[in-house]
Length: 53
Image 1: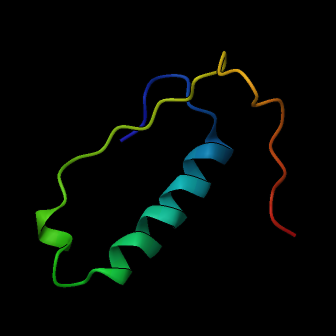
Image 2 (image 1 turned 90 degrees about the vertical axis):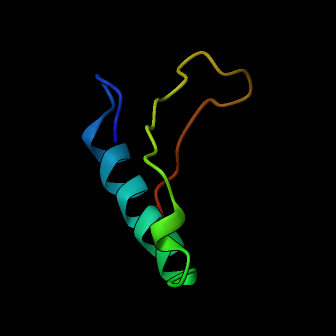
């Protein structure tokens, strides 16, 4: 589910969000294919991450 080198905090956050997303569509969760998350550390305009709280 995660590309090599994906930080553990991003893995935890995205796993939580993915589970919430699937919970919204319980009748369609079997239709969801495998997803691989990979960070783009060179994405312009993304200079920081502010965790909730």
